Image 1: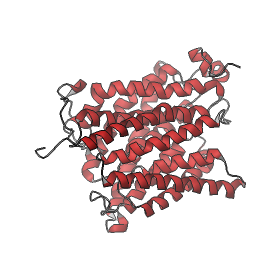
Image 2: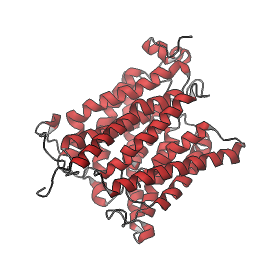
Image 3: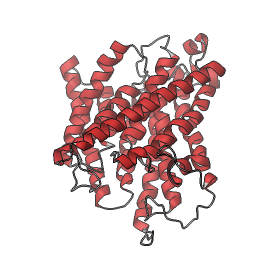
Image 4: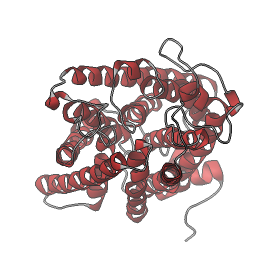
Length: 409
């Protein structure tokens, strides 16, 4: 671009945002999930997030970024295979999709989104998946599910061309991970003991706090500049999260008569998820509505739909990320305000067609993620096996798979 000029302020903000999103995965997701599991599986649960981050980091620089964002477009499905292994990307080269920051900064920022997406999936599978199978799944899933969907929505693919709105990952990250978690949970089957009381809720509170903190890089960073849009995304992210936490506390009061800390942090994460696709498009007032409603949506999914359908999503990845992501994506189609961001106009501002586009995006991402995840999971199951044996599951994966223990008492 002839008018593209490096902006040091934008570059500094995007480096900080990238580091914040790294913090969300390790240690954020690792601690959040680790505290919710049994103490005999705490290290294995954390290890799944750590290993997912490492594997994705390598895939992304080898071929992930070029296929998702780096080249042209092959039939709207995937990017052209150019600059593989990042060959030809110069130190001073500016990003095509973020023309005021270096390409390498944009590559790193997008890598963190891929890493946290697959790390989120692990929550559905804690306590019963082989670690070798998890590592194989990460490679296949990032390559065949995440990369194409990222291209569809953000990299110039067919949903991007259609005008689907997803500011920071409602479809690409949350619906994608939530539906994949559901598919794999169905395939791998129920745990021997489906009762799961958090062994260290303190870990989970710290993890949730790190997620809340890091999410400002996730959402406000997706403005790709250090300006007014980043500021707007920042404030609506915090507002929706606070509203969702309050909403979940109220639901707890109404249902059980007692508020719970687990409910409060679940509500906060649901709020963070729901505002993600809308963060750069909606007003503060809309953020309040999005946050208040999303806890109802996720609470219903966890308390009623999960029981009715009988799937064993251990840490409710689908109930929180999948369902709140769904609500957030649709809410973006309702509340997107052109005076916040000229790229998005929702139904309440005279563009009801945007809802149709959002429904198509949600259905396409969910359908593709579910089907391909099932296929990949089945291939792994038929070759090296998905699930640990009964003894390992009962005794715990920390000692059986890693010969380690989180606690020596």
